[in-house]
Length: 80
Image 1 (cartoon, helix red, strand yellow):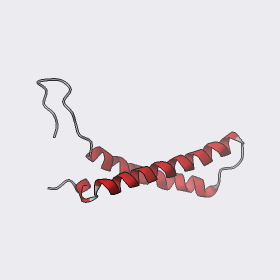
Image 2 (cartoon, helix red, strand yellow):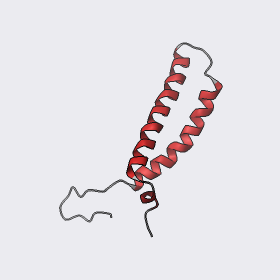
Image 3 (tube, one colour):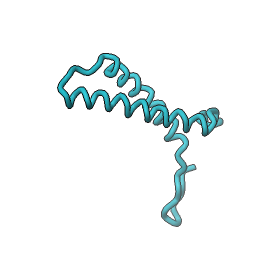
């Protein structure tokens, strides 16, 4: 069976990861600012955080599937 993450080219995955990182940073910054100035957080930012959390789980699984395990101890078996 082929690794399903190989269906998405590396350049596209990289762009998606960077885009997700920027969106997460922006959303978190808005919520942190709202808390710092003691104003209610925008409803769209709270809802966006829930959506980003679900998407983050999917991206995490893709990233984990593309992690190469490197043998750092001689004589030990490396998972492939």
